[in-house]
Amino acid sequence: MAVIRETDQFVEIMDEEIVLVKRDGVTIETLAGEEIEREAYTAELDASDIEKGTYPHYMLKETDEQPAVIRKIIQAYQNEAGDVTVNPKIVKELLDTDRIHIVACGTSYHAGLVGKNLIEKLAEVPVEVHVSSEFGYNMPLLTEKPLFIFITQSGETADSRQVLVKIKELGYRSLTITNVPGSTLDREADNTMYLHAGPEIAVASTKAYTAQIAALSILATVVGREKGLSMAIDFDLIVELGIVANAMETLVDSKETIEHIAGEYLATTRNAFFLGRHVDYFVAMEAALKLKEISYIQAEGFASGELKHGTIALIEDGTPVLALITQENINWNIRGNVKEVLARGANACILSMEGVNQPGDQFVIPKVHELLTPLASVVPCQLLAYYAALHRGCDVDKPRNLAKSVTVE
Ligand code: M6R
Image 1 (cartoon, rainbow, N blue to C red):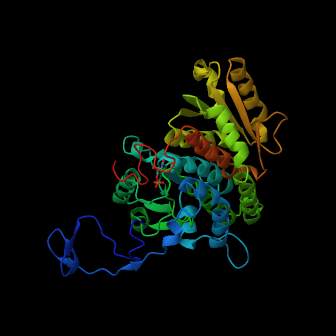
Image 2: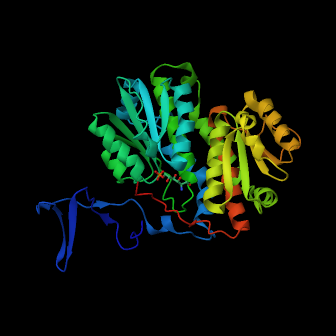
Image 3: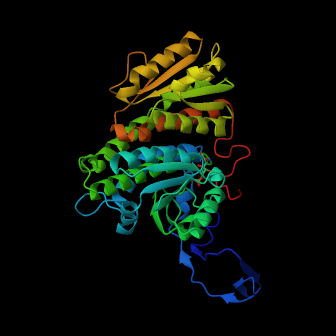
């Protein structure tokens, strides 16, 4: 991306190769000095994809792009009959495995947690989700036919790549889900599924997260249908993703309300808690990460039932506690937890989904299918982090100490 204004022609370089830039041209050599011939490829990217346009920040632009990205994914994974479809080679791998291991970092790890729920419910394949940097120390006991799924926006994250190299050495199969064709994890895995989210430039990942979940929902549905599972067969994913895209549009149009909430709850605080249960807990973790990395507020995403086992000791007068509620079956439990923190003086804010909302909730998220709620509920959280960072005068797109691709372990 850094040089796309100069050229769209690129040549891949593998490990242990040396590029010699001389007056009369460029050659690639092995460490032993043998010259390597390799064709250039054309990058499918143009300079306008990486412009900010009229937006003050890439993060805001990328948050706003999410409805369009979901529609693009629907298009990319739809067949002529209007059904979702995935490369048969990939489907075969999922049909053939007895356990999936999702490996990822940061936001992609959080998408993996949501993906586990989707794959287990729709395709009935057991899934474990691993933080890449911990995998080497906590290598799971592997079953007979494990399949490793690497989720990575950039396709370059060193911690994830290290796991890929290791499991390849052990002879296991791999699938990368990435936004960047030609990236290292794309090239090195057995198969790849692309996100079609367009370049993500802000350090804080937004549209890649929702694209990852949408891609995982497609994969899970296709595999579930292939297995004849009624839950997947009855799930009209194309329609449901269309509803998600519309909901996202409403959400990105609610900036004024969200900016106001950010001002009221997050502008001056030193810490904040996001509470959730079930998939809302996974989104709470992502909401906290987003807030931490761009506003420098110490934030924690918490399974709200765990509060009373220790963390509630941190709640004092004015502590912001933001509760996410999208699921019917956890509605009253989490509202009970909110009452508990209110009784200890917390500044509590409820973001609930239409259908489970109650009078007095601070923000209502348009209704989407219960399996896809993270795609909608994360959007106000991304915007809350954005406006909190603005209120505090932080550099939204380039937060301190962080890089977009983490290429060191
Ligand atoms: O490119 P990847 O998806 O592999 O990157 C993983 C993380 O470094 C990344 O998601 C990071 O957590 C983001 N800055 C979060 O917004």
